[in-house]
Amino acid sequence: MIPFLDLSAMHAELRPQLDDAFRRVLDSSNFILGPETAAFEREFADYCGARHCIGVGNGLDALFLTLKAWGVGPGDEVIVPSNTFIATWLAVSYTGATPVPVEPDPRTMNIDPALIEAAITPRTRAIMPVHLYGQPADMDPIMELAARRGLKVLEDAAQAHGARYKGRRAGTLGHAAGFSFYPGKNLGALGDGGAIVTNDDTLAEQLRTLRNYGSKVKYYNEVQGHNSRLDELQAALLRTKLPLLDGWNVRRRALAAQYSAALQGSGLVPQHVPEWAEPVWHLYVVRSAQRQQLQEGLAARGIQTIIHYPVPPHLQPAYAELKLEPGRFPVSEAIHAEVLSLPFWPQMQDSQQAEVAAACRQLSTNVSASAADKAA
Ligand SMILES: *Cc1c(COP(=O)(O)O)cnc(C)c1O
Image (cartoon, rainbow, N blue to C red):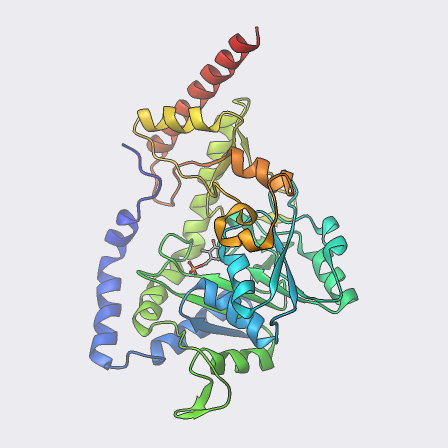
């Protein structure tokens, strides 16, 4: 049995440091916005190469609170990828604004910068590129367009801790970036967590207020804020993991290269990596025209896979109100019909990976042979 993801080896190795982090917080009796949160914010900002990090309750809040701080609200529009996890869209909807989807490049599966300008209207306030599966979106043309049209750019970096674009880290490419520390992310807490990273002093100050009841001084409330703080315990746990993140990302890169080499010629197509991208492979995703047979065949061999994501946001019942009918975003719809995420985590053994790759090769050969039979 090979699971899709197994965090137990990582946590077994880190057990003494995690226990120590727990003890530190318990002994301090300081559970909300204490020294561990402040230290993690400093350390994660430094890691990204940015001036500020503001810890919040989860990745969705990181995105939503940033849009809210920028004054995005009802009647406004925000450009989002048609191909993303629904949180990107929900962050926009929470403000009362409308998400306006733009199709991805079919090879990178990230938003296609060339298609963004046509989606801009007088109501557009911001663009939210997503660094999908850990690969940075093509940010230079997006920032150039945003500057020309007076728009804000918010990176959804929830899957991209440590990824680089032309040498610069995700989190420093837009005006601000939202990160998630959901347990399965490249840097994961043992529960929910999130953060905003930015070089903008004013935004950072606003977010520190917004996440904490709109209050700078306790019981004095400047705005109607939220309760969305990075938990002190999660911050302490994240501090034990942060120094190991680069090493885990190196291992992810090696595993991804091995998968891609082993699957060459199999008909399974991995995410294309442009020469300026240094992805951190949050997921290893292949496209297959016979995805269902592939997934079932792998399951029959005890190999667990997941689809990220089975239904694009515009076809979810949650977004029926936008009346975006099937066929409206064909590139995204084709991606959702074909993607499959293979078992992948930094502590995965080479032997486990070889078993998955061999099974994939065998199944894709069988599948193409039976497709050829049908055609004949
Ligand atoms: C995980 C994720 C989020 C949301 O993060 P949470 O911490 O679960 O709220 C947002 N966007 C993308 C692309 C994600 O993968």
